[in-house]
Length: 196
Image (cartoon, rainbow, N blue to C red; front, side, top):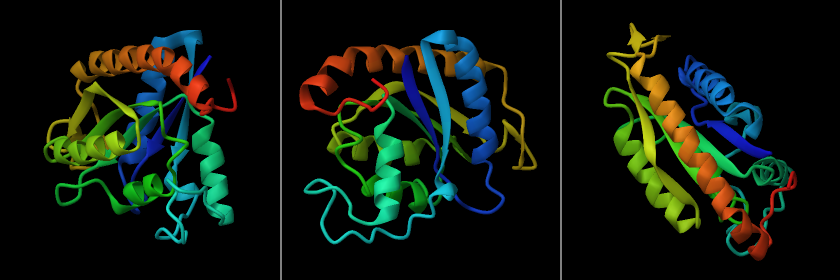
């Protein structure tokens, strides 16, 4: 069974990301049925400090206990969905910091994006796509762009428009197809998730 981590990118008090991620998880699990398992990964549960590893992750795995805990969790997945807001045209620092902690764990795996913001976090997702390429991730085309004006009431009460259900289904279908296709690549490179 394919295992997908849905990463809640914001740790800000009063964030919308936890509700958006739960909505994605519920839709994805219902749509995929028994072919995949979707788990929420909340960055606020990890309390990662600003990157405090002396050697970059591309050269050696992290040595700090919080780095190892984070690496173990992320390494266990076959694919990811990043749920991100947009702050000043960028993803939150909490998400980019968490991504920077690791290298090997991301490689050879697909990633999809669900963004929310004034303009659907489109610019934040563009920056995450660039980062994914450097990490040897396969970022898939479909993304869900949720508008704070049209999918939230008073910028806080999440009420997604019906059209987004089909968008999530397309995103999940492509993410699972890529996860299956990249399985042999991960096996050949030794980056097989622990659940495989």
